[in-house]
Image 1: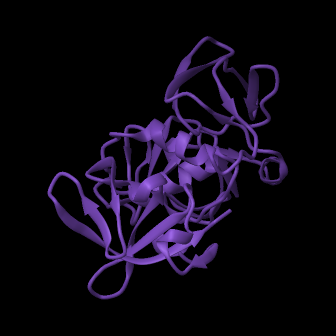
Image 2 (image 1 turned 180 degrees about the horizontal axis):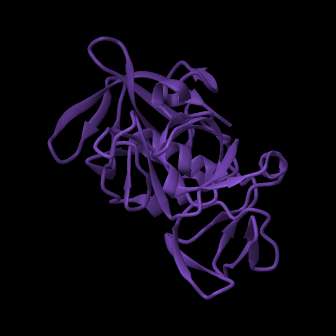
Image 3 (image 1 turned 180 degrees about the vertical axis):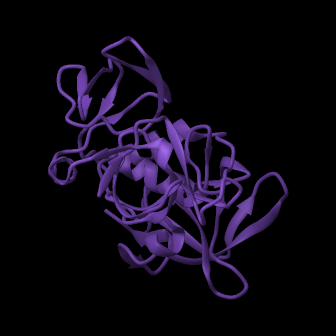
Length: 255
């Protein structure tokens, strides 16, 4: 079985309860495989990054395997506005956040199963140069931190880096420790360029944080909110508290 998100933002949970930890979000238009399903919950695997979790059966539509495969093969087109709306055949309005998928988009319209939608906003549909990563990252500045979040209304550190790269046409995995398995290691901060990723670990040596390197030893990352701090050989130096907040583990060049 296969499905697609037909709502703005759907929580993906760790277990089958509305009070369970939200580990991720599924954004409008994202498609997935339904691995298991009971009366209320489905355990799904996202096509984009393979991330798995539970979602409410009432918060998606089933699609055929044929449509799932076509969506996986087709070029991805995303909404480019911080927030916008789509309308269906009956003029019902649905809000969508930045980086929502627009399946089979063509001439300001797209379709999910038998429902047609219109969208007149900005789209992102190209692989951009590395320089655009910082430009896109600025769109999320001051977004509040939200564990499992992936939108301008709440985002976590790896959701931030993944979504920024996604809008620029590149695929990152979901969690910081997974993203750290991608790309090429850089030996020194001096070798890095704006758009490279810096990863940080905890006292146990587990990678728990990631941010995007900017010019002049700055870094933009989600910590309380999406903010800009200083980066040095020790880690992130918080310009507000005048203290180091994260310990640097590795720097990676993704593109």
